[in-house]
Amino acid sequence: MASPSDSSDSSDPGDPLTREVVDLIGTIVARYHEEYEVAAAEHQLTGAQAGVLTLLAREPMPMRGIARQLKCEPSNVTGIVDRLEARGLAERRPDPADRRVKLAAATEEGLRTAQGLRGSLNFAREPLAALSAQERESLRDLLRRMVL
Image 1 (cartoon, rainbow, N blue to C red):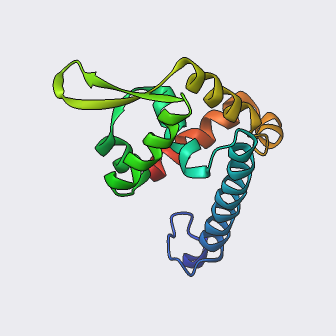
Image 2: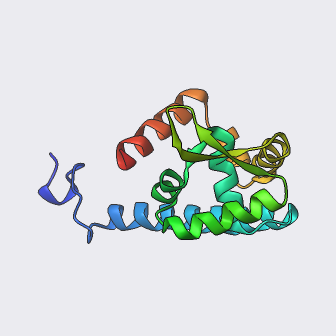
């Protein structure tokens, strides 16, 4: 018979299991950021530039959309896009839905660079490769529930 203290739905931040999960997530986030900075530097980019380029490789976005995704001010994004544009990695183009709005988009060179960035992020490959497809799907589904 289970006691109240080992309830599987406990989300008390003082609960040892919750603390361990939070610590593990923190470790993963820290390792991701460290490796992302190294990968960015290999492409002569800052972490912020690499983050914006990665978003733009998925789809063109207005500055406000990029800022919302990265949780920063649009004025910061403008400077980052300026630097990416100067390197030929991004360009500004009119939004077909509203020509008053400018979209930032990755150029062909930007798409290649973003692909290289993704290829440089090795830290999760081996641990994830050790999981079955079903385990990776379960992990993905749990993480989605946490962020959505």
